[in-house]
Amino acid sequence: IVNLIRTHSGNKPVAAIGDGGNDVSMIQAADAGIGIVGKEGKQASLAADFSITQFSHVGRLMLWHGRNSYNRCASLSQFIIHRGLIISVMQAIFSAVFFFVSISLYQGILLIGYSTFFTMGPVFFLVLDVDVDSKIAMTYPELYKELQKGRELSFKTCFIWILIS
Image (cartoon, rainbow, N blue to C red; front, side):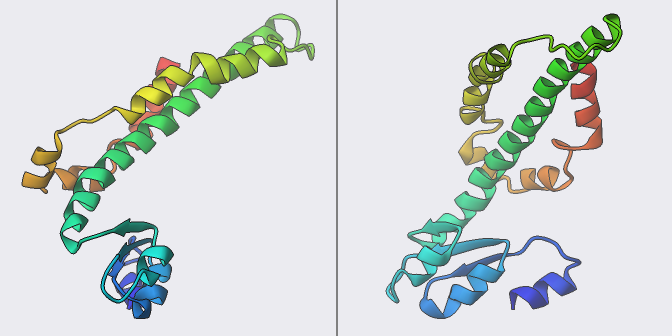
């Protein structure tokens, strides 16, 4: 069923929801498999990407946690590109000033320290990043359409992060 939906929807991501052992192959074939712990056992929830206890939790999983996951992944990827560009541009300028001699601007320990300790704070703050309240996201599922347009992670936003770098 998943492959049929995928071919007729233009290769869009497909989510499959199942609650029993007979749904395991469908869950594994989907891009996002959701298993429900049910009376038939835990085979579906063990084979799934996400496991929930009730079918009523699917809306919250998709609309609230999916929204936050997309926003956080978009911000994190752009932040990592921003961090790498800062180091690379500074190294390129340093090399150009000193006639492209092969000397590193920073020692390895300083690069590791910058990449881990100095930039660790913004990464941990992404865990707490929420753009709308969960009740609002559940009340207005139209907000999800904005995410489908991909404006959080587009060439425009990446270019803005590059200019900021």
